[in-house]
Amino acid sequence: HYHCSTTCGTTSIVHLFEWRWRDIAEECENYLGPNGFDAVQISPPSENVVVAQPWRPWWERYQPISYKLCSRSGTEQELRDMISRCNKAGVKIYADVVINHMCSASAGEGRRSTCGSYFNASKEEFPSVPYSASHFNDDKCTTASGNIENYQDIYQVRDCRLVGLLDLAHRKEHVRERVASYMNSLLDMGVAGFRVDACKHMWPQDLNAIYGQLHNLNTEWFPEGSRPFIYQEVIDLGGEPIKASEYSGLGHVTEFKYGAKLGSVIRRWNRDKLADLKTFGESWGLMPSNQALVFVDNHDNQRGHGAGGTSILTFWEPRMYKMAVAFMLAHPYGVTRLMSSYRWDRRLLDGKDQNDWMGPPSYPDGSTKPVPINPDGSCGGDWVCEHRWHQIRNMVTFRNVAHGQPLSNWWDNGENQIAFGRGDRGFIVINNDDCTLDASLQTGMPAGCYCDVISGQRTAAGTGCTGKRITVGEDGRARFSIKASEEDPFVAIHSGSKL
Ligand code: LAG
Ligand code: CA
Image 1 (cartoon, rainbow, N blue to C red):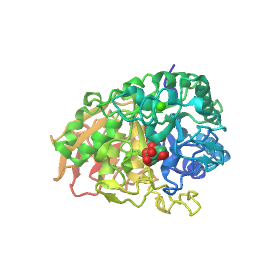
Image 2: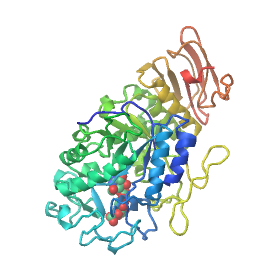
Image 3: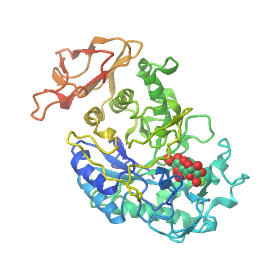
Image 4: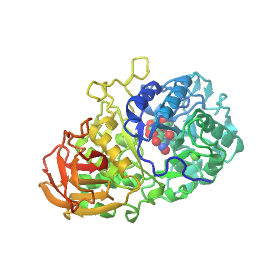
């Protein structure tokens, strides 16, 4: 029953990690809509346990207590207002839904939850859903600890507790109905789809049954009959029996190999080089492009959680990060997701971050701080806002302009200098070598003068250019010169940057 409705082929999703609903609403209106961002992935909107030890970690939001809609990001009313304002601004909302489990078995008992709902973790009681002990997988899991102990065993990966989190029994109709009703309440409010958390830990047949109960999108904003866009988090780097492909018939699937491999190429590890990217895609063992949700980093692997390993690039290494994101947005593979992060007090000790738990910028009472926007368009107060970096924003435009065009006119120097186009709509040149790139290349673009959207951009009037000017001749060729020492050693032009 899965078919791409509004989103297949559309372009960039930005994960506004831990943002408040009020700030997201403003961001949709003031920035995302006007700049052609397709959608926002929001942090889990459901009620979660309040963790005090360590103090209010970001990961408490992956421990649901009920499907009531109050969280650190705001109230249900604020959520509703955000969805409606973003939809009006032409920006879809995808909700991160945590449905594999509830809170940790050791979370105790009481009302230390974000809406104050009562729960008893040791008795597996969540009366606000309601769930009780029979709705969990204890009878199915056969490990001694009750936790997942061996990822080579598909039964325990699906039926035991992921890091001690109470594992829901989706074979039972009551659980399916409760989960679907939660997702439907969001669809009815106007969300356009979901990032489904921890799908590796749920059986595809159970997910299929749940997705089958989902409503169409709300016709206040979407065409009659539109189905939700679903992307499932399945960490498959190879080497385990559970494969991403088991889920691709149900919806899109996260392609974790993408960021891991791209990171390694840009870091030039193990003699990996940009020229190798000529064939990037299926032949590298990646899933088919039309099933893949791709990203350079995500909220887990940017801090050493989840998977991807040490090759993952993040905002902490901005020069390489921008190159990776620009490559991803220029390249036709997959539906792309951008990360928008907050800075934290990173403390690397033997490669492990001691502060990988730290939550978003917040007040002493634990409430999340607003995202202030500086006069120059950057974010203040430890919000990184990678999506507001002009190089990244302008590449989001590139992807929209190039949408539907094939990869074309590939060039490389056999090492770390590459270039490629997207039909006659866009062209990018990247120099990750230690020497100058200076070449006359076939761009496939119509003749004319273009403004490089990396070193600058076209001025509002449309005739000026604050960056490098690139002249494409009648034969489609243009000369590019990029020094190895440049802060952003890449150049991109597209139909919309023609002067
Ligand atoms: C995910 N995808 O499959 C999320 O992307 C990931 O962020 C979630 O883990 C995970 N699945 C479960 O939803 C995060 C943290 C974990 C954290 C967990 C629950 O990466 O570190 O576990 O959320 O909050 C934490 C502690 C564990 C502890 C567990 C239970 O870090 O040490 O065992 O809570 O108390
Ligand atoms: Ca499970």
